[in-house]
Image 1 (cartoon, rainbow, N blue to C red):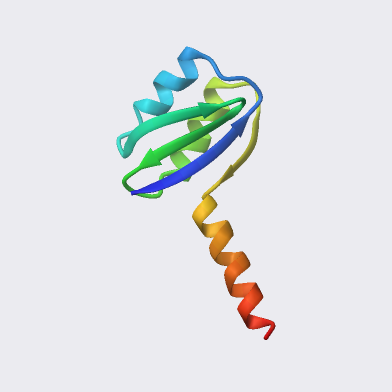
Image 2 (tube, rainbow, N blue to C red):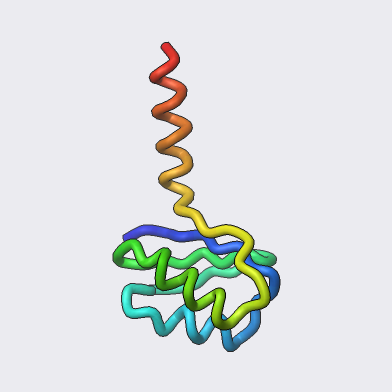
Length: 79
C-alpha cells in the first residue's frame, strides 16, 4: 500500500465520504487541511478529480515516499 497526501482548502464530511468511496482507498487521516489517504494502488488522478468536484481548492497532491526518494537520489548523484 502507499500513502498520498492531499492539501485542500476546506475538509468536510462530504469530501471525506467521496474520497473513501474511491475503490483502492483503505483509510483517511486528517491533520489540519491535509488528508493522508492510504491506498492499495496509485489513484492520485481519481483522488484529484474527487477533490476538484467536492472541495473549494486542491492545493497539492503528493506521495511523501516519492519526495524522500527524489531527495535521496539527488544527494547521492552529487557525490
